[in-house]
Length: 426
Image (cartoon, rainbow, N blue to C red; front, top):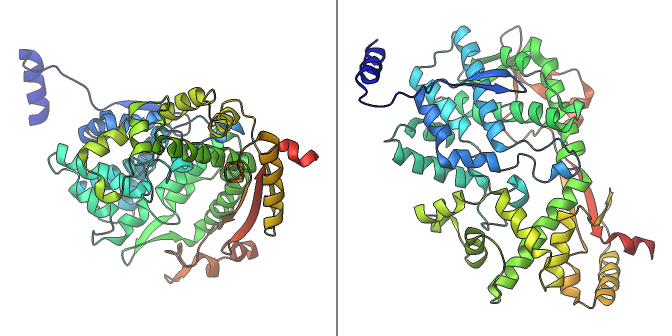
């Protein structure tokens, strides 16, 4: 009441301009999403968070699925929304969650991906070596905490797993968390891969807390099985699709070549912040506020702009790799259950080096091999617990009568080889 009176007086006396911060957003997945507090609104409005509008959620997957142009901004807002619903359900079932804890959960899930670099996972270790996005997310959260006078302190403790209520971390980061629930449903929608669609409403309604651990009620076990199957299918059909895979590998190779040229003294045509990270090796210990601000000004547009310029560079390797991405004229990729031989790699590399008049080392930017792994459910990680009707709790693999669920807990590895398309014809 006092807050409303204060706002009215300020507005009436024109002491400060009035801004309505309790906005409603229209989301294609969930419909209307309300921003629950002024703190959340101010975090969303911050330049650090607004940058997520310019970070692709699925990297270069739009080269395969033309609709996959959604961003980390979409995902973060969606994850926050379903966290609100999860809190409502748990409270209804008698789980005590204070207003302070609710705010911490919403802030933590909202900011969980704020540390992603350009094109998300595609360049995670390319811009800043040996530093993952979770560590950078934490750096952003700590800096925002300074700017917001310590109001994010509890959210940071929850995010780091230092808060005594274990189930709160599980809502943010586990094998059945709000992050995965949103990105599976959202990525399925934007790619059109229907197999990835999940019933997040049903999953959330089946949540409960037992002995401070997140559990799923037994009547929701089939929804959990569908969730795990959808995750497996989305990895093979979307995240690890061979064309998405080769495009992201080419992007990483292009940046690697650009770094080599810059560190040998070449000046490349790109943004100042991208130039800085190519010139400078930055470790986690180096991340002061100045470097964090530099990182916050990097996004997909820096990379795309650079690639458009680099395709006309005098260096054949950099120009060709850049051209491949810009024009979607990619390398050929073969997948197999067995490793490809070194002889295959060497033969392709020698043939391409002789044809283009480049060194074997440069040819390996275009000819390379590797492996990918898909594991929908890990027995070694925090389990998905099923609360049975007799009040006992069991791992979903043991509780399920679905034979395929046991198979989903085993990692499946596939091997790939990439090389210029025309070499396959020789």
